[in-house]
Length: 262
Ligand code: 13P
Image (tube, rainbow, N blue to C red; front, side, top):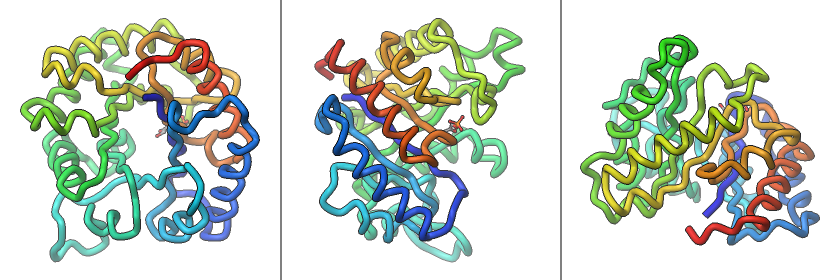
């Protein structure tokens, strides 16, 4: 399976979100190379707009994705949103462990694991985000850091859950910086993650691994052709329908040229 998700982060108004969702859905209809069974597409609006965006996407093949959730199903947690709440507004997948949450909300590996389990428990599919800081890459520790994050998120899970999990590799130095990992850097990390997944469990070896970090129309197809890259998690370029649709087109064309049975 390939997957492209637009992470809208904390941008826009309700009207912007509804318009963007409608434009994305309409734009994708006009992409002949896009087979929605082969390349799934999702958008992750801010929480207050989930329901309106879900309504705008009704009858389309674009999935509703949430950016985060709390690890508990309910309780006295002012300001948070639980996974069952997201399920009740027809969210399909939830990002957990995004680097902006790891950095700004100080989420650690244990909390990311708890959130991942909460997402599964609510019947939703988690997208677990991993990635190293620039200092960690410069110190040559990038593969070890990402291995630690992947193992903490997934080791010991019920193997049946692995069919529902997606991993997104987002090097923190490439997020919002315009500085994309080269296909060689992405390819090397994706190979390393694949080896870690295979060591965790045979079922985990089939988990799709997305790339994120300054994905744009100009680099999406090349990244998607990189062995081991199963799609993209897109930030800034997903805020404009035309550029997001172009990214999906690039991934769809790469997929058509190299269909992967997974
Ligand atoms: P940019 O595409 O803006 O670099 O953001 C990537 C990201 O964080 C997606 O989750």
